Image 1: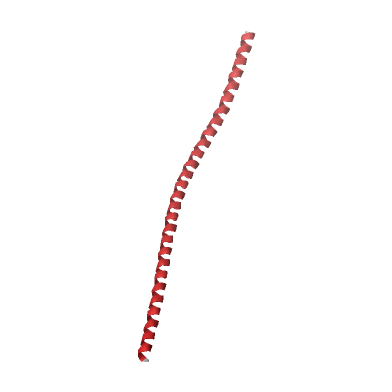
Image 2: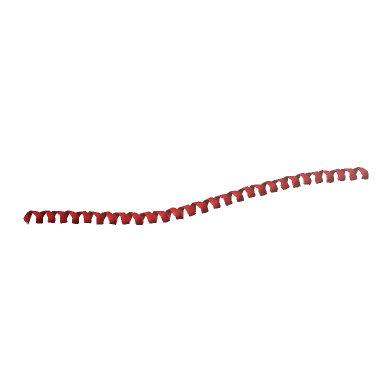
Length: 104
């Protein structure tokens, strides 16, 4: 019976070793999958960061361009205002010239 108990104990330990080996393999596989997923997430984060930086640079450029366009628009408005004043002055000068030609 002692030999039979030794064999049962050996079978028990063999089963336990097989179970632990399977669990270790599964756990290792899960850790590898988690690491791969982490790398995918990290790559995506880096891609998004790069896209964000590019969009931010484009935004800054467009913002600066908008400010320049606002300045140009203001200058055009002022120029148009000056141009209308000049037209009024020229019109007045022509009227004055006509008046003096008729009176003299």
